[in-house]
Amino acid sequence: MKKLLSILVLSICCNVSAYAVITGEMIMIRSPEPFPEAMSLLQQAITKQGYQLSRVQRVDVGLSAKGYKTDKYRVVFFGKGQQIKELSRKFPELIPYLPLKIAIFAEDNNTILITANPEAFRDMFRQPELTPVFEQWKSDLSEILNAVQTHE
Amino acid sequence: MLCLLTPLTIRSLMKSLRILKIFFYSLLLLSLSHTASSSNRGQQLYMENCSICHGEDGHGGMGIPLALDSFLDSASTDYLKRTIRLGRPGRIMPSFYWMSETDIDHIIEFISGWRKSAAPVWSSHTFKGDIDAGADLYQKSCANCHGTTAEGGKGSGMRFSRSRDLPITAPALSNQGFLNSTPDQMLQHIILNGRTGTPMPNAKQLNLNEHDVINLVSYLRSFQSPQLSNKPLYENEPPTLIVDSPYSFDETIANIKRSISGSNFVHIRDQSLLQGFNVENDEGSRQMIIYFCSFSFLYEALKLDPRVGMFLPCRITVTESQGKVQMMSINPKHLSQLFNNSALDESCDQMYQLYSDILEDASL
Image 1 (tube, each protein chain N blue to C red):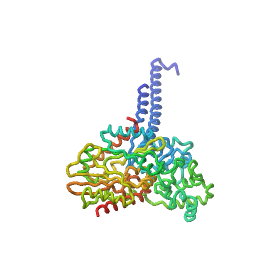
Image 2 (image 1 turned 60 degrees about the vertical axis):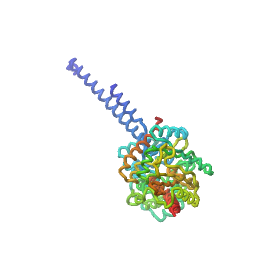
Image 3 (image 1 turned 180 degrees about the vertical axis):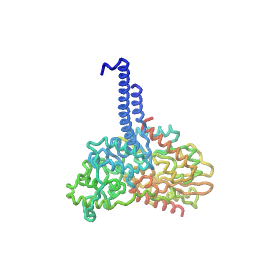
Image 4 (image 1 turned 45 degrees about the horizontal axis):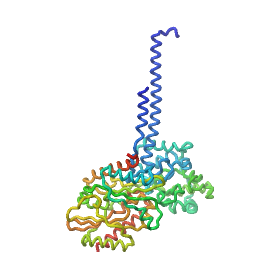
């Protein structure tokens, strides 16, 4: 009986896990954190995943300065310098899509984070050499967004 | 009878009873475990695939509020199943064509947990109303919110698109995903009863009688195509626009800035591709990104779909390698495919034209 109960409890507990975030051509999550906390978690997760932040584009600041009413909206650019250098040399047509980016914006007390699913790039850029790069990006982006959602 | 039972047989019977008891409890626990794990699986799948748009509690956001009573009262299990499977082509809601039947059932089971009454069951009977009469009624009573060709309300439903007091963006009634999921009887129910908790009134408030409703349903059904098409819109378009420049690297950058200004866009900043990465370019190789923007264009694009900010502000990159200078940008015609939002098509075409004009102008 005790054994059965343990199996039951274990099977229920195992189902409370981190949420995968890939939906078609986009990778998206809704973080329960307000915008400032989610932004901070995102930057930490990017660094932890081995990437370097290059810039944060403050879209909302630009819009507000021009008189448009908007909620918090930023685009975070990041990458690995050596990889960007090599990719831009071998595959210049990829340059406009570099570095990687994640859009992050507030919705009520939640924050939404979105990035393009690199698997979609595989259909756009058909060079076989790029396939492992896109697969790695997909895995890393999922890890980063999962970390934001689960506060790991 | 009892006198026939020896102490040995009694012990043996007791043992059998104990085994039966354990077996019974095991079955009960396994059944409970299955129900709990099925429910958790539904919740997990919902959180993974649906909550981003419909909210963790089903109260909506980018997507419609699924936990709304008036929605659930009309949504049959078959409707939910088809909607998940087909999506709404061109309306953000993706097709979960890849998901197993079992997983879709788990999600529906989770959503059904918000129901206060049993799921309706609709017949597949097709109404034979007057399509022309329905078309007139549609223009008078429905087009204001759902669009003149039933293309649906504008915007994705997020706060960039509309005020938060509106819980729903008017659905695209001519959408093939919608029509292939919604039987006539369900459409009739929705029009007759409206959607309490949304701006959708009921037939009485719209002065529609039962015949009118049937005519309206037949008119909407006339939009249905025999087959859903998943063909990409821009399958022959290259992902990147690239133009050779006959000028030097610096002259090309100056030309682009002049062209941007001539297009009534604002130059924001220049940034080397490798800036911030502590990596040096190879000798004779340079890449400079020129960022520019029209804030009114940006604002309108975000209103249509807040996700589009991922590809904004506009940028053109000038590259130099082994003496060859090129200008390049993303091809905006790929974007609406990525976002499954046909409302972006016009903006993407505008952006495509803008990039093409600037690249051409700078190379003259």
